[in-house]
Structures are given as C-alpha cells and as structure tokens.
Image (tube, rainbow, N blue to C red; front, top):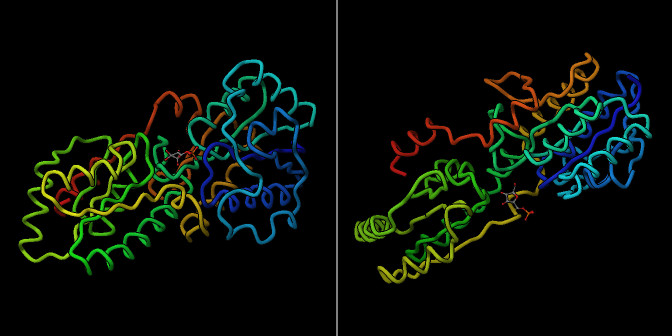
Amino acid sequence: MKRIAVLTSGGDCSGMNAAIRAVVRAGLSNNLEVVGIQKGFQGLIDRHGEVLTTKSVSSKLQVGGTFLQSARCLKMLQEPGQQLAAENLQAMAIDGLVVIGGDGSHRGALAMQRLGIPVVAIPASIDNDIPFTDMSLGVDTALNNIIHAVDNLKDTASSHDRTFVVETMGRNCGYLALVSAIACGAEYALIPESSYDLDAICENLQRRFKEGRDNSIIMVAEGAGKAQNIADQIKDRIGFETRIMVLGHYQRGGSPSSFDRLLAARFGVNAVATLLQGNSGKMLGLSCGAIVLTNLEEAIGAGRRPIDENLLRLAATLGI
Ligand code: F6P
C-alpha cells in the first residue's frame, strides 16, 4: 500500500478536521502518501483531490467543520456514479480510502469496497444514531454546544418566570434532546422514540409555577415536533407566554471538545492501521472505551442505533 485517500461526507461535525489530521499523520508515519478528496464523494466523481502534508493539516485540529468540505452526493446513490468514483480512485492510484461521515456516507463507502477499493469508515454525525459505536464523532461537541446555550437560556427564563421550548437536531433520533435534558436539568425531553401527552405536560407546568418555580425547559428533538408548534399549543391550553429556541446548525459547529479530539485521533490512526493490516470493508466504533471494527454491511444493515434504554430510565428516575 502506497497511497490512500480521505474524505468527509454528509453533514459536517466537529472533530472531522482532527480525524483528517490523524489519518494524514498516521499515513505519513507509515510512509504512505495521503490524498484529501474535496467535497466528499462529489470530489471523487469530479476527481478533485490533492496530496496532504503535515503543513496542510497544521492548526486544523481545533477548528470545527471540515477543511476538505463535505456534501450529500446524490450521484453516489446510483451505480454509474459509484462506478465513476471507483474508476477515479483507481486512476489516482489510491490503494485505500478512509470515509468520515454518517450512515449515508457509509453506504457510499460500501459501494467503493464492493467495486474493489479497500475502505475503512469512521462514524461521524452529531445524531449518535450510527449502530456499533457508543459515540460517533461530533456528538460530544454538539452536546456541549447545546448545554452552553440552554444554561444561558435558563438565566433569562428564570428572570421572567418563563417556559422555553428548545429544539435540537435529530430527525429520527432523540439522543441529543434526551442527553441534553439530563445534562441541563430540563423538565422534559420530547423525542421521536417515545410518545408524549401535552395535556399532562401543561398541567405539570402550571403546578411548577404555582409551587414557585421560576422556569421550565422542554427539550424537543426536531423529529418529535417543532418548537414553535409546541409553544403555541402550550399558550392555547394554559395561556403561558412560551418562548422558543431552535438551535439548528449552531449545534454542528465550534471547536471540538477534548473527547472528540481524542476520539478523532484514535479513529484516524486506527483507520490507517486497519488498511495497512489488509483489513477493509469495516466501520470503526467505540465500545466500552475500546476501538472496535464492524463489517460495513452489518453496520448498514442494522439501521439506526436505537435509543439507549438505560438513558431513558435514568431520565425517568430524574423526573424527565
Ligand atoms: O444528520 C445530521 C443532521 O445534523 C440532522 O440532525 C439534521 O436533521 C440534518 O443533519 C440537517 O441536515 P442539513 O445540514 O442538510 O440541513
């Protein structure tokens, strides 16, 4: 193996730059040339890559987003696009590919593997919905972003006896809303995995304020409802002037946390080591603190990672 490539694909997250850096440094330590592909799989289709050096990745570790840029590439869903991407990798004399991204990106990775390019995938998505890893890259930083925002919000909420509905990302997965509710001491976490009763919530909000509580925070994952809609319903039912905060893409940016920096380093170095061992068609994961490998086919076939029942129980015990 002489030359490998690395790309970031799908929604960006903090820690991607740190992972690229780790791949480049691990590659160079093993006398490999490392090519950075621009804009995810689109860059493979356009044959848009350049050789990366330690200088190319200098001072990138602490920066959010991805300097290689990312894209959601529809052409990679079809056979002609996949074929072209694999041909371009061969034309660029790439012996192995590291794909950093979420489940959609892993499908592209598997397509390349099936077309004869050895691939290792790194799970990266703030949703934490990728199976066979306790944590995906970017999740911890996103949680810290949410916590920072909600802590600030509580100051103003309690100054005005207010209820706030805070919308987190998570189209199909309530992980961010649930964990941030636990970490911020919120009253509710409305998530796509569980149903909720707005009448009961309203009753409880009224009781809380009668007891003299000066604020209530309801976390809602985007897949469980729109913050504005929930706030309007609360106003209609009990007349509370409820405010909202939609965190949106704010959650995805910012300097990676120490956890994400370390995870990125471990994932990046292990991805290169896996390719060098002649192992491929794998996704890396974190399991009970150790880096583990799962067949990409199995990871994709398993669908979304279900919400952790222990977290649900923890939240329930805490009154969320
Ligand atoms: O998959 C990660 C994610 O951040 C989801 O939580 C969110 O619904 C989606 O990406 C937003 O995607 P886009 O950046 O394309 O709007």
